[in-house]
Every structure is written in C-alpha cells, then in structure tokens.
Image 1 (cartoon, one colour):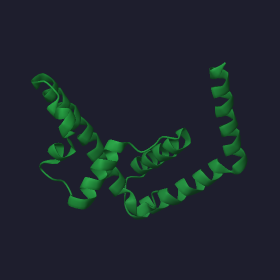
Image 2 (spheres, rainbow, N blue to C red):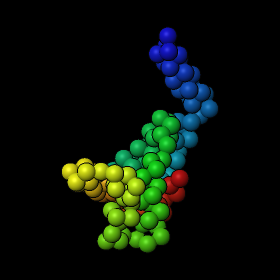
Image 3 (cartoon, rainbow, N blue to C red):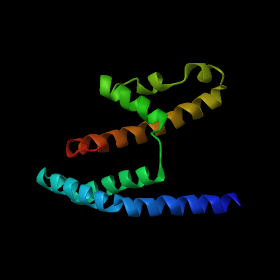
Image 4 (tube, rainbow, N blue to C red):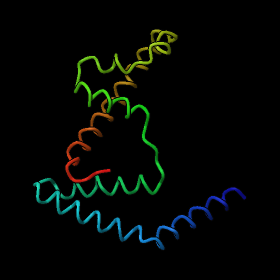
Length: 132
C-alpha cells in the first residue's frame, strides 16, 4: 500500500513538473549555460554532464551533504590546508575508537574529503555560469 502511494506521489510530482513548464525552463537554462561555457572555452560535454546532474539532484529532492558543506566552508575560508583531515575529524567520536577503528575512520574521512574536494573544484569551475 505504501509503495502505491509512493508511486502515485512520484507520478503526481512528475505531472506537476510537466504542467508547470519545468522541463522547458530547464532546457532553456541548460542551453544558456552551455552557451556561456562555450564562450568561456570550457569543455561543453563536461559542463553539460555537470548541469544535468544538478537538475537530477533537484528533481530527486536531494539535500546538501552536511560533510560537503563543512568541507566547502573550510575551503572557502582558508583554501586547501595541509591539516584538513584533522580539522574535519569528530574528536569526541575519534577518542572512543580502538586503534584499528581510528585507522579505518581516518581512511574513510580521507576518501570523503577527496570526493568533496573534487566536487568543490567542479563547482568552482562552473561557478561563473550562474550555478545555483
């Protein structure tokens, strides 16, 4: 029963997007941004993939990742620093871990930081093109 409601709600949302002209607006916006990317000499296919992923995230209703927001704030305020992993570590949680768990936590945090850093760089690359 809940699955039917979920499908029904998704279908209703899709219908609303179609009726409101959401996709036409997205197409116009994408065309404008792609033109700006072309004018600035950026890779058009890379820009297209990036902008399309932003639309997909908006349609799916994805929220900003709290960890990414912390990384973004750090990079905006201080740039890339050598002790980023240490600054992003949850000290209280880290203190409760065993030696092996601390190693896994640090490795996991490092991997998340590198993904967030790549995302930050992509967003900065296209920031002059009117990204929301």
